[in-house]
Length: 120
Image (cartoon, rainbow, N blue to C red; front, side):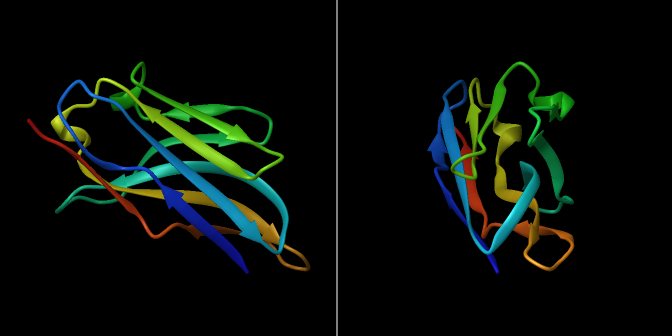
């Protein structure tokens, strides 16, 4: 199995910064992409940012210029640096990894979620 452990999150004022980290471990044969999604109350889960093993990055338009995703392939970790946070960034943030276990096919794995609240 593949386990994801998230850290970071919390309460911050508008304009502040937070850093989310996610570490993948277990019987990992390969990882295709790592990233972050978020889900606000009453809304569907949406993509925030993803990064492939080769370093290709995709951001949601709403976070471009404010969030930065990075990845350590050797450690199977992904980090999301969030700057200039806005109240509309408030959501539960989920780490996502597209990985393949040994003798298996690629599938999605999800972290447990971490709350980010942006409020005065």
